[in-house]
Structure formats: C-alpha cells, structure tokens
Image (cartoon, rainbow, N blue to C red):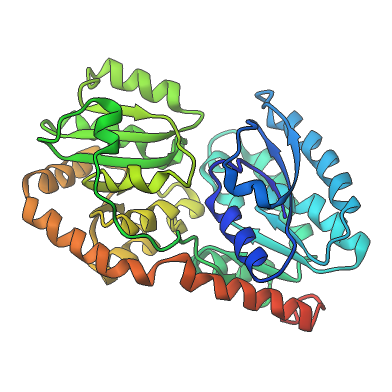
Length: 378
C-alpha cells in the first residue's frame, strides 16, 4: 500500500490493511509521515516511512515523495500494489508495471473536484491532476471508491468497467458512557454539546458552523481535529467572542476517538458542497456518529441525505447557510425528546454501517485479482 497521508488518523488505510492481514496477506505500507508517534496498532505491519515534515509547498513535497516512494515500492516484491488516492497512484503504477502485477486504485474522494482544486486560480493545478488521473487510472486492474455517486462519475469520466464501492465505515462499537470531552475542556453537563470531528479544511463547513454559534446560546460546539485552517478558525472564534461556546480539541489517535465521540450529544457532518467531490462526499465521521449513538445534523447532499433519511438518525440542512445551521442547532438544543428519538435511530442503524460488514467486499476484490490478474477482468 502507498499513500501520501497521515497514518495516525487515516482510518480507511488501517482498516483495509488490517482486513487483508487478517485474511492471511502480508501487508507493507509505504507512506510519508509528519510525526513518528504512530498508534501501536501499526506495529504489526511492515512499514516503510519517509519522515517528511511538510515544507509548506506541495510542489516540492510531492516530487520528493514520488521519487522516494517509487524506488521503495519497486524494491518490494509485492503481488499487488494498492494506491490510496491519486497522489500515490503514480509511484504505485510504476512499481506494478515493472513487476507485471495488479494495481489497485483506491479513490477516497473525487480527487480532481475537491475544493482546493476548483477555486479561482487553480485551473493549472487541477489540469495537472486531471491529466495524471486520466493517464494512470487506465493502468489499474481495479478501482475502488467510497460511494456510488463517485463510482458512477469515475466510470463515466474514464470509461471504466465497474468501479467497486467500498464504504468508509468504522468498526462496530457499542456506545460507551462518559464525559471525556467535557472533562478535557472543563465544561459542565447542563447544556448540549455539539461535535465536529475531522480535518480543518476550507470545504468542511467549519466557518459556517462557528458563525451559526453566534445564533445559539446555552450550548457548546467542539471542533476536534486539526488542519490548515485552524489559525483562521481560532481567529474567527476570538473575533466573534465565542470562546465560551466554541472549543478546540487536538486530533486524537483513531483507537481513542470513539470515547470522545460518545461523550457528545449531537454530531455535525456539514461539508460544504463545493465541487463534485463535496456534493458526492460520504464522510467517515457520519458513520462514527452512528456507532456512538449520536443524532446527526448533516449537509443536504445526496449521499448524506440518503443515509439520514433511510435511518431516521438525523436531519439535513443547507451547509452553506449559518442561519439554517443555527436553527437546526437550536431545535435540537431545545428538544431533548427529539434528540433521544434520533439517538435511538442511530443505535438501531449502527450494525448496518460497520466495517465488519464491508470488509468481505475488499477480500472478494483481492480474491478476484488472484483468480484473474488481467486488467479490468474482475
């Protein structure tokens, strides 16, 4: 497996690696890491790590990673090379081509449509990634992605055979009682706690959620995670005098996250539908909230709406409208019985949205590669 990402928090990579290892495969992971304190869960894997603190310029970081990863992957006598996302596909495709073995492309999102590539002045960068994907995706023997909307888009865009859907689901866990978030922050338990967990990125709707809290008193919003917009988000909270209601908690290892999630009252998954990647997104956090038994306020996008309407575990709202978000927050703040109703629905839905039910699909795909390693034949 190859990735340019954070092994400390990339749940999908770990779950897939663990499922393959449990099925008897030997899994090597080639990755760039920014911190060396990886969770102990990774100790059982053959890790090849480039210790690469970011320089602040992806134009320098990516070529360095590609040169290193290409050499390291080609030195590994693998039977399959598995690229996590487009930024790892080129070195993995070179290694697979050299050894004449299958290549798997695991697209965690619609890469070329992510918000950082569709904004003003990004045409050249987006064109580069689009050309790279068009050129290398045709080398893949199987393409995987996280939801049916992105699968259809990739099939249509590149004239691919069936793109497999492998949803980004967490392991099955029972909700655990506790006040981990409130204890961490020194908060009282007499008012509801709303939780966002994940990356601090422009498209993740965090600025709108903070703005919504200007309209919501007697409640707390916790932003658990980190990312490039953290400084601007903290400044927004300070300028709006929301420090008593909006709180930041650093990212925690994924083997500890569930306890934090369970201690909230409502989970927020309000990704802005910027670009097709945002519109089609099916975030992992949505299902983590279900496993924790939390009611959810989700973005009114096709994939999120389908999950929340079919399960009855939450409500959808325009993620670009702070007033609409604020109204949804106030509604659940004031209606404890409604929160309990949605939480019960989340608990009922949780067994249907867990990794234990999804992992067999990954093993089936790999079994198909063993039966017929020809490109596009499985």
